[in-house]
Length: 264
Image (cartoon, one colour):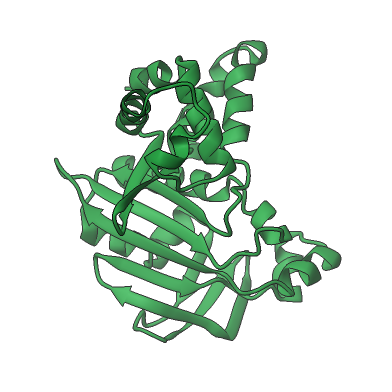
């Protein structure tokens, strides 16, 4: 199952393309060809291999096709099997995992994964308290209609604020809402010091969007965009790698009934 990933990573040009997307996510073929000693056709073939391995995802924006890095497959490999081998033998993989999960230069994180489930089941997993508690450790209180308020419950603490609202609720297609408020109570429960809390609380409120798209053979394509972030802000750095692990847990839960911590 992981052979396409390892084969894709074996080529130095493909690793270079991943590095470029890590530095600047969401690039067109034209942008990726800049200053690269390869023909446009060769770069296109390398991108096709990376996309087939699930390491990048492509999305149309107007007339252009933009390419996005997806660290999920490498994260899943490292999380599931890295402890089965000697640390020295997996140092390169661990370093690559860390690099791919580093902050992106744009003020958003974009992650795409494919989950063997139905749009209805995935939609429920994004909102239902039993699901979100299992893979996220968070539950939500909301009637999930547009502009409805949201309360976040995590580690015995409830975060409630008028600015925490549902932005879009299109069943089985799109869910979008504002991120939670960084209250002193939340910080205490999460183990975040006051200086850090005050810093991220002063940053613009971010938003998260989940796009669900049925694919082939009973698979749903899930794209998560965490946007409206300050690219130089502390929250942008704190979110590094968090979504890739969260989506790995969500995928595992829906496909196996267990979270990653239980798989091994």
